[in-house]
Image (cartoon, rainbow, N blue to C red; front, top):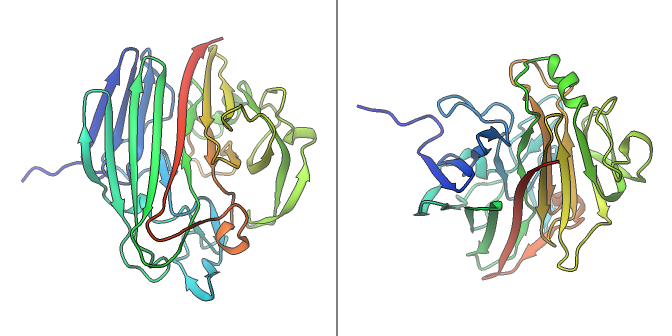
Length: 314
């Protein structure tokens, strides 16, 4: 018997100078290359995904305090994923094998229908399409409410943008500090010792990324909101520039309301990634509890989010 990788089937796509691999497990983006360079930090297809690499964060991104929330008068309890922080993390979609819907040379589409589970009994189907062209990667995520009742929804993705080097452990901090990050938001989200939100404050000091500063002295696992750079179509972008001159731009459509950035400084050496996680989200942590930017999907509703990743040499 020949076993497939632990992360399931590997779906490879390519177009021009771009190539990518998406896994059956979680529809995770395992690899993205431009001109042979890693744009995201790849992972071993036959091992546990190390640090949320490439995850689709659904039906919510980030954390929910104590895994508890109320929706339309009903209380729910989700599994606790982070015991030290007593929170539920990044939803359910990454835990399951997704169904292949279409695979062509330059694009792949997978879908996942949520099972009937106590913490999220709502019947939704999420579809993820990864499409490459000469300009880069376009990711389209659509959720459909199959249910006869409303369903709560928030969304994000978790790419670790490669810093262009391959250091391990504590040496990653110095490599990341040579990078620059541009992010146009007016407010920084304050958190408690469990990284759960306590409020918002105007960006200042190390949290002001509007001018694309270097990451020297900036160690983050933080969220930003009140986006100030929206284009005419409502889109927003973050630009990550590496010391080798490659600038990676992640652009989210009008549904993106916040960004999470994690440099990984506090992450243990075995799973720390040589790069920076830059995560576009429709809502930041605890949206299921606070209701901030929470989407209420009515029966039969669809809700789509589009994210693109581009690269250039500066």
